[in-house]
Image 1 (cartoon, rainbow, N blue to C red):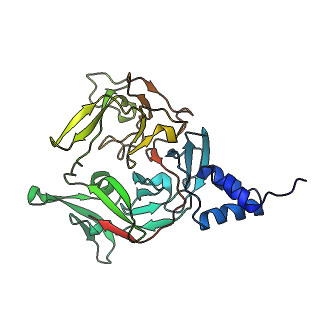
Image 2: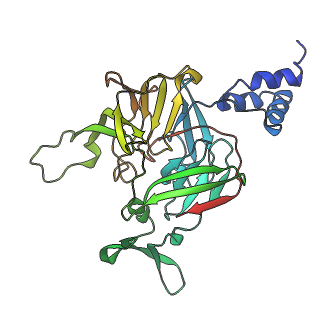
Image 3: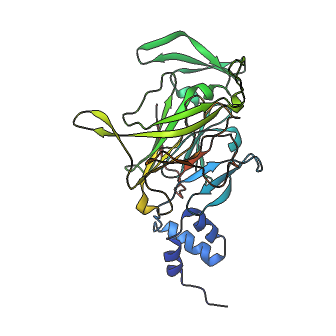
Length: 340
């Protein structure tokens, strides 16, 4: 048997691996696990991570999620803590590995799929427009969602939603930012009524097909409606003119779009990815977070000629929750501030 490699050499080798392969290596033997642990403990692991497609599969349990690694073209399965991931909304993912989810009671949780760490965010009732309706025992029966924003009132009467339905009408997107001064995080939620647009925007143009429904059919079958992204419009900000200027591509960059925190990466740092391409998943407001049976719009778009490719493997993922891009991370939870 060949002698074991010294730990410092193992650490040098492991520092070149992306997180899924690093975690597999740590389970090989005691010495490899020790090298991986030391690499993380000493803060010597800073490998750039390729975004992965996060999804669930009907063939797995409700608590099992899948990561499809674009670089390795492999699927990794992860067991996550309750509440079951198959029953949550995915409303955001951060650049450092955290998902933001809404459970069946419309409560929010941050979860790191790699480490399994999970943190409950402040209650949905801390959002100003949300008021609980309780019975005599204090059990929440429904929520009232008031229809105002700032000084504008859209409807004097609040809309009543069940705890499970509130998330369909309240949440739009969540962002997680590292706060370097404290080592913690800030979570920002875009929610209804009347969610606001940020100053930097990327638009998509999509074809909508109604499947086998006839034009004179009394009602469309939502499960047969198909969205296909056919073009992405990219803009830059002209700071002097204070306006958006359309550009014709990303040159040597790659864009990841969806319900995740959007990412623009340098292709030279990720040789397995395609420059001047957009990797996209569903993020259509009112559709991706509300309908469970609809076919998902997932693929890769070439900005040079608007040609579209499907992502391997073929669509084996479940329609619910809607798949999302996530960048694997080994970061652990610090302090948290919630901005509303």
